Image (cartoon, rainbow, N blue to C red; front, side, top):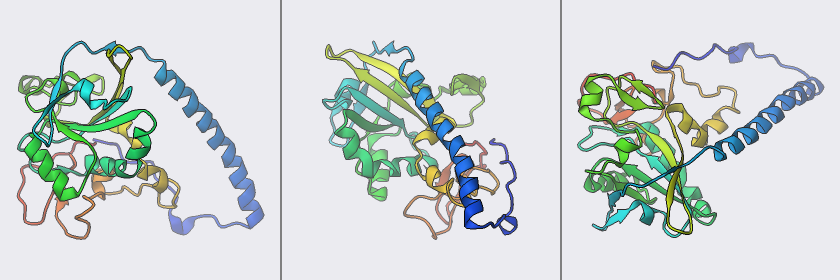
Length: 272
């Protein structure tokens, strides 16, 4: 479970200064922001320089129109592919609010990615019928395919075999963990060259996905910050599906939303 955040100064006790003092403090802090920007640029260059793995195995996915498509097809004529591993397994009770918040970000920028040589697709292990039911309920339009009965989720370490879970050896975020869930979330990037060869270039999991969770960049500029002071000290304290705010229900620590009067099993406390 995520550790409680470091306590911050209460808003009521915040220092109030003159405009000149504010400018001086802001300029001093700007130096730290610029240094962080340079560090992020350097880290991004190192990320792009990481070695690749050639994808030799064939993967096929189910689509809403009933067709089977390959991993190569998902590139849709572009050389780069961003895959979001949506945390949705077959017959799963409840929908993950964290994954839902993340894909909410893509609707507005999808056309910009596509016109900058990047295709985007969400992949889940749920059946395509289950995926389409969620898509319709949420009014999402981004590409979303099913890896049901495929090894894709297992090979890219976001889904776990029952025997691995029983042994406490689910390999996630580059280490073995004792996961109570069969499916977790992450992001993977692939490149296809002119010869049609596909390479796995990068994957990130757990809090690594916060890099593309743009809402946090807004919240962190506000006086209250992330304001995650509930039982989980994570987004599960406050995030709801975008069409369920104000409607009640509850969210488990593992991120699954349950509508009012909906029964569930034991509440998990897995930080997303």
